[in-house]
View 1 (spheres, rainbow, N blue to C red):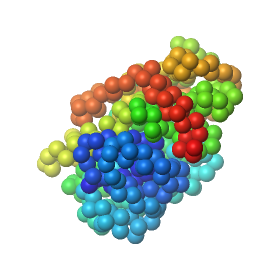
View 2 (spheres, rainbow, N blue to C red):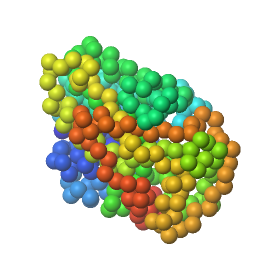
View 3 (cartoon, rainbow, N blue to C red):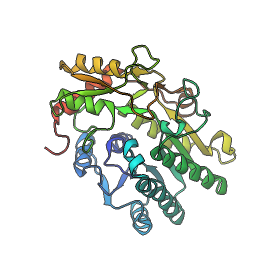
View 4 (cartoon, one colour):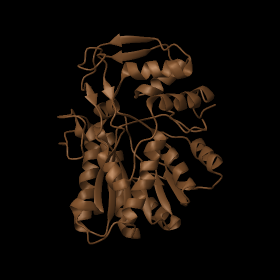
Length: 344
């Protein structure tokens, strides 16, 4: 049994599909503060399998202990948390409360319930402004906003937890830029309010929910002047979690900290695409013109960021399969079929 916090969210729901399809039993623990229970209804429709769903908040240790005991889970995938970089700057205490305190309470509950395996949803934001590209896992960590710092703090807590208990099995997955949707078109990214990320904003322009896209700066040192990022299909990302669980299960307890009981792995394609690359690819697959305006650079934005994904191949046997066109095509299938997201 896998205990998935935040399982109704964008990445969580896609991972639940892959878990169920791989034969795992799944319990979702979610407070639905920025997700919809409808996503889990659709997960069950896609897979033809049932989920156990428990509503609760990760900052509530007693609720976590009760849920872990009820689920009889032997591993946790931890997605729950807040994730908007801009909002984290204006509400830093809220981010440290939800993200850091939530992770701490979860680890305490796991300890009480003798659950020793966890896959943690981290982020490439822990690297900050890249010193070199592509980014390897040993790149210096220098997050530039409270969201990134909250992820870095949780990573440190996990590493300390492992040093205190070498029987723990921990995989920290640093995501680059998740996009796309399940090819059924039934689940996808459904941000509340104004999207913080590029592709859902483009999708909402294409479907008529927004007038135009703002491109924040076109004078970066990139091939077309717009920012370059490593976009990864959400299904590829979800499969990375299945591979992480398998890798943790196969670890020899005699191995040391450096080689494996606590591993940190990038999940990215290794390919950088610019804002204009994504916009043109989306226009191609949707058949829609995407109006845009050039706006001044945003404070804190960087020119380029993309992963070195070699370690994921070596330790997880994982490699991204989907290209940019497939990411845009699946995103458009979801958005055009669900123009208002889950709130139809």
